[in-house]
Image 1 (cartoon, protein in one colour):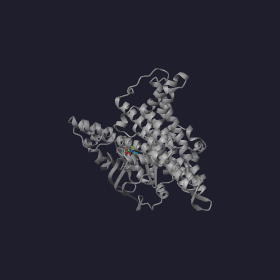
Image 2 (cartoon, chains in turn cyan, red):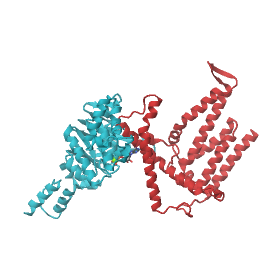
Image 3 (tube, chains in turn blue, purple):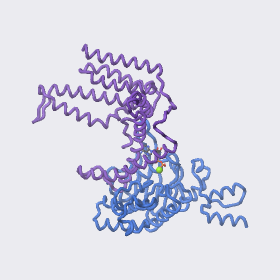
Image 4 (tube, protein in one colour):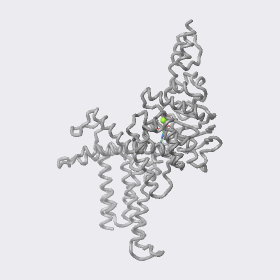
Length: 281
Length: 266
Ligand SMILES: Nc1ncnc2c1ncn2[C@@H]1O[C@H](COP(=O)(O)OP(=O)(O)O)[C@@H](O)[C@H]1O
Ligand SMILES: [Mg+2]
C-alpha cells in the first residue's frame, strides 16, 4: 500500500524562479491497483512520480510504502529503489552499455546481487518485455528500433524486480503498434506480478481501459481521485483543466446533448455501442 | 540540484544596467578587469568596490543570487588563497612542521582574494544583466572591425549564442539522465576516485548522444529556415547607443581615471 500525505514540492526554493510543482497532495493506493495519472503538461505528474522512489525529496509531507516512510532520511536509498522501479519518459535515452544484456544488468548489478542471480534476472526481464533473449543479448542497444529500445530500457528497471512499477508516459513518441505492444506488456506484467502499477498517460482511452484508480493532477494539486467511471463522469471539470474524455465517452456525451437517451458512464467502445444500439431499438 | 547553478546565467529584469548597450557593458567589463590588475595596494580596491556596489544596487539583482553564482568557484578561490598563504616567503608568524605562514603571505592572500572575488562578481554582473543574445550581438559588433583581416566574427558569435543557449538544456538533460540512472540504483557519491570516475560512464554516454541529437535537430531546423552565415543579416532589436550609454561611459571613464590616479599618486 502506498500512502501519500500532504506532499508539497517546491523547485529551486529561495531562488527567483522558485515554483510550486506539488501542493498538498494526499492519496492512498491499495495493493494490486493499476493506477492511471492524468493532467495537463507541467501539472506536476513527473515530479510526483520522482518522489515515489526518493529521487526528489518533498519540501513537506510524507510517503509511506508498505509501512516504510521513504521520506525519512534514515531509510536506505537502495532499499527504496529496489522496492519502487521508475521508468522515465523516453527511457531509451538512458541506455549506455555496449550490449543489451550488459545494459539490463546495470540495475541488478547496483543491487549487489551474485552474478548467477543477475544473469537469471537479465534473461527473465528481457523475455518479460517480449524480446528474444538469445537474439538480442549481444546486440548494441543503439542498433535496435525505437520500440525495442524502449523495451530494453523497461527491462532494465524490471530486472531490479520492484514491487511497485511506475511508468512516466511509457508510450510517448511510439507508433500505434509499438504503443499497444508496450501497454499490453505492462498489463501482462501487472496481472502476473499482482503488484501496484502506476502510469502517466495523455491517452484517455488507455487510462479508462487499463486503470482501477485514476488520479487527476491540476496545477500541482490533486483535483480528482476515483475509479475511471467516477472521474470521467466529471466532464466539465476535466475539460476546464484541458483534459478530454475517452473517445467513446465523448461520442455518448455528444449524443446525450443532442437529446438521445443514453446511460452515463460508458467508457469503452463496446459499452457505448451496446448503449446506442439499445437506445435505437 | 544541478539545475540551480547560476554562474553565467541571465537574471531577467529591466533595470538601467539591464538596458545599457551590450557593447558598452562588454567593454566596461574588460576595462574593469584590467583596472583590477592596475591596482597595487588595498586602498586601490575602494574605487572598484564602490563601482561594483553601485552596479549591483542599480541592477536590482538579489545578492543571494549573486553569491550562489560564486559558490562553484569557491574552490578555486580557496586554492589561490592557500597557495599564497603558505608559499610566500617573509617574516614567519605561524609555523607547524614544514608549513609556515608569513606576514607577507597573509597580505598577498588577502589581496589576491579580494581581487579574485571582485573579478568574478564583476564579470558575472555582465552575464546576469545581459541576455545571451545581447552578449553575442555585442561581441560580434565589437569584433566586426577585424572581419577585414579575415576574422569570422559572425560565425564566432553564432557559435557562442548556440553554446550559451544550450547550457540550460544540457543541464536539464544531465539532471534527467542522472535521475534515470539513480532510479536503476547507480551511486555517484561513494567509493574511491576510480570507482567514481567509472560511475560517470552511465551519465556521459547518454549525455553525448543527447548532445549530438540536439545539435543535429538544431542544424536541421536552421537549414529549414535557410540560415546562411555569410549573408548580410539585420537584427530585430538593433543595438542603439542611447544617452544613458553615454552617461555610463563617462562615469566609467571617471572610474578608470581614479584607479590610474590612485596607482600613480598613491
Ligand atoms: N528540475 C526542475 N527544476 C525546476 N522546475 C522544474 C523541474 N522539473 C519540473 N519543473 C517544473 O515543475 C512543474 C511540473 O513539472 P512536471 O512534474 O515535469 O510536470 P508534468 O510531468 O505533469 O508535465 C513545471 O512547471 C516544470 O516547469
Ligand atoms: Mg512529465
